[in-house]
Image (cartoon, rainbow, N blue to C red; front, side, top):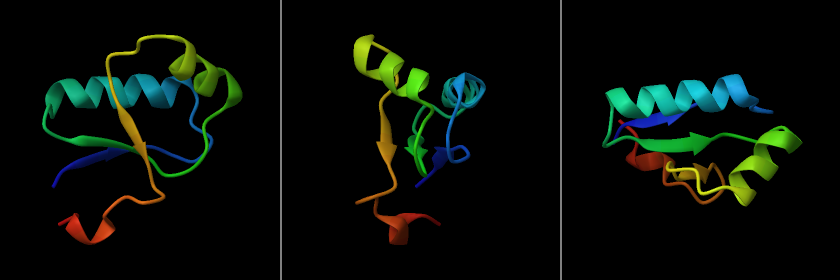
Length: 65
């Protein structure tokens, strides 16, 4: 399994980097390892952003090669 991740307290630069990496690796799963900045969190909740990112909690870490 391929994942695309970023740093804790993700900002818009981190989100943009994840979006760009998702274009290069379309089968990869996006993972936020921790919290996002409030404005990023609100943006993801209020818009129809085309990428679906998952949270670390509940993520199957043993499936990562």
